[in-house]
Image (cartoon, rainbow over all chains, first blue to last red; front, side, top):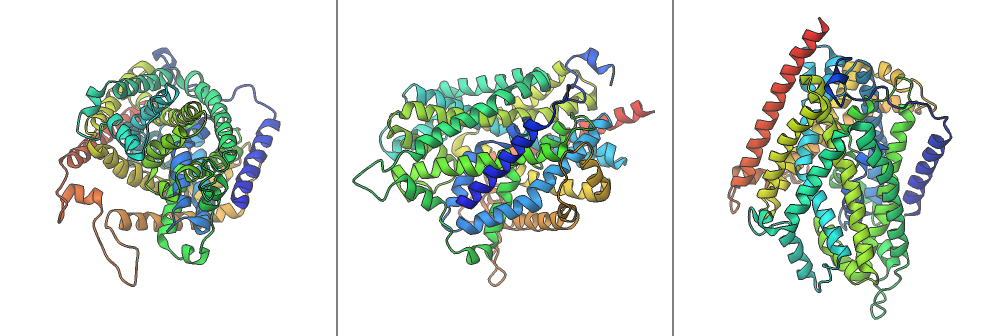
Length: 43
Length: 517
């Protein structure tokens, strides 16, 4: 139990730390999927 | 966050603990097989989906048929993405029904309606709530139908708002809330001590010991059933092969770090599964009811045993309500993700706007869900769709993905693409795992799965026995097992749905050819 739980907690904590310390980028989606017909025109 | 929300579902809190606690195929051997499967299948295919998805997005495609069309550039290529459309939609047919049970149970727990006594009372409540007595029983039972309609409409209201304002918003709030609720429940479970002082052997610590007992590891690792169960759990829990990650990944920017995103989503799922799911349900059930209560499958553990546990616990209304709220959040973040691949395909394949895509998919899923809701006797329709789409379909799609990555896209090219904009480097050994180990491992596991669950092989080479399993007997019948008209009808409807989807892909292909001229 200690090994299994310890491994996943450590990995998740490391990923969280890495994600949170990575400089944020202003937009995070390359493009937003079209919600209305007018949005489809540019595709 | 959306991918993690998709991955974290009911299996994390109900299926995984049951598998680890299984006396025959659980224990330390299961966990070793589970983590090996995670490293050679789960994580690599997750990166494959992220890589192929982002590439497809850069070519203007967001659905599996479109992305495969962009990668393979062959007239038949888009048809390989068929499963990436029908698997998430097909799983949605029954997943949203289970999701409505979670919401219903949360409401009943908070309202104190689950203050029953004795195991049969809880079993009867579950059977009545889900309409297992007769087909169509749910439609006359009132609350269950109301919860189903509410949950079905809620999913579509959210999905209509799009990725950023709908799914992402729900996941950004839902996932942290889910973890907070799980930590509250974990604290409650770990402080249960010995609920009944007259039975000191039933303590939460003995429950943890029961669940995490290593047992005979050597014997376990030589048992093919252990490997099959471990690999299947890894596969299903990470949502690989669903067609969901590949669609979500198509929306990220070309220089986004998909190596870290894939690892983070996987680790979030494993944290919820191993550290939270593995510590809450089985130890709590054991402390109150003993080892016999733990056996019985996912639904029995979640909807029969645990309500009984909460009923006997101080503050049980609150903790029971919180537990089913947790399950509901886990389920809705997953069910939303099952709709997006379908929406994306209808938008890009048929040129429909969001409103029409949502309406068409809503119609298709309403028919499928009503089939599951109506044929509720013994949950036959639900288990049939689960087997043919939720088991076979996902395995097939995952296997297909790894071959398309290696043979269609190219391992070296894929490896290079996976690192575009990455802040971390994927360890080099995964390049070889992706190229050699994952395809072989997955093919063997898939073959074993089919031989075990379709052909009914007992997985013994020394004394092989083939006994057709229930899903097969439901279709063809056998001694003492007449064919099930419901199962036949469900499989027929799934075949019609697959043919209809193939027709849509054909029309999409014509549209893409027209647009590229």
